[in-house]
Amino acid sequence: MTLQKEKYRAVVIGASWGGMNALQKIFSQLTNPFKIPILVVLHQDKTAGGGVIDILNIVSTLPVIEAEEKQKILPGFAYLAPPNYHLLVESNKTLSLCISEKVNYCRPSVDVLFESAADIYRHALLGIVLTGANNDGANGARYIREKGGGLIVQSPEEAEMPTMPNSALEVTTADFVLDLDMIAEKLNELANAIDKAD
Amino acid sequence: MDTTEEDDDIKDLLEVIYAKWGYDFRGYSAASMKRRLYYFVRQKGTPSMKELPHYIVRDKALFSRFIEEITTNVTEMFRDPGFYRSVRANVINHLYSYPHLKVWHAGCATGEEAYSMNIILEEEKLKDRSMMYATDINRLVLSKAKKGIYPVQCLREYEKNYIDSGGSHDLSLYYCKAYDHFIMNNNLMNNIVFTEHDLATDYVFGEMQMVMCRNVLIYFNRDLQNKVFKLFHESLDLGGFLCLGAKETLDFYEGRDHFKVVDDAYKIYQLVK
Image 1 (cartoon, rainbow over the protein chains, first blue to last red):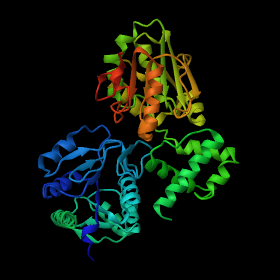
Image 2 (cartoon, chains in turn purple, red):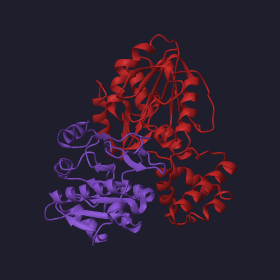
Image 3 (tube, chains in turn purple, orange):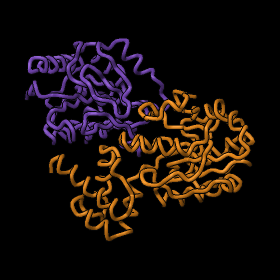
């Protein structure tokens, strides 16, 4: 299977247990400027401060910022869902936050981000499911596929916790199952393809 | 069904609801509205998205259920303890200068935060001169708020929140436990009026020294946010305080210059001119 290279206009990433290390590994290897906006849900404690963003920004090649409501989604940035809020995408390509019920015992929930982003970006969305100890993200991954989007899942063998990648692979098929280094490489390939297409 | 068709269906439904029932959801952010709507229509006995407009104009019970499901009612006592700590540190001192205090808690849901604020007023010796108006669009949650009865399994978290908020007593001072629930003390209820109010359609109903509306405005689009900020602005006495949720900001409001930031992290503002 291959990904159609020029079509992606947004990347959504879901990560849980072990996600901090995984995200650092990916974000330290992306080309800058990176031409596709990245939206990230990382499960964290609701009282977590801005530490995650600070740590990611130490290694990240592109700016990682906390998602704010009504923020315009721009290429070159990675937006991280704030602790205790779901992150969603509006039809005018802005972000919105919501604090309604937890989904899969999680807030932010990967499913909520994946599903709402897939509604807006449809086939132009690439979903990435990383390490985690629960099944959040599986339904969202399936939904992205149903809308014609692409899907990469971290290889369960490499994942610090394989449950989340495995759960996604149980309910849908991925375009690629890859180790983190290869995921970064693939993302760079896609972002560079946008460069040429524009 | 493609996305635009779904969006049109939702628009039609919200128009019909406004015309028939007077509740205005047209200014709500689409993404989370859609999410909740689809959750609602997937429930047993609910008509499909396509049929819903036809049924909801005729069936009041269905509409009531819609209101209950569509609004977010997630809350807890002393939610975001740092906010209450900041109120104790930065707001309370200013309130002593008023002989009478009116506090409006808009979007109070099941009331946990209204009681929390009342506990702070009590501890700061301000409760006897205070009246609190706790409002919500959802009648069902208001009836729960009025009762002030909550499940005991929440207590552990509430106790911790209370201490983190700067509480120096024991939260058990303020409630009675019976079986698997606890009920707020009567004296925390006698100065709170729980009443229906729709921020999208209803008006100012008094001059307040404090307006608290946390994690409601994130569901509104920019136009509706501005309308509601104007409503709060007009409701506030000069020198009064406006408290928003941590992820909400006054920065895009046309009357922003009238307010001073008291706490940037917890979004506490004071009307200064």
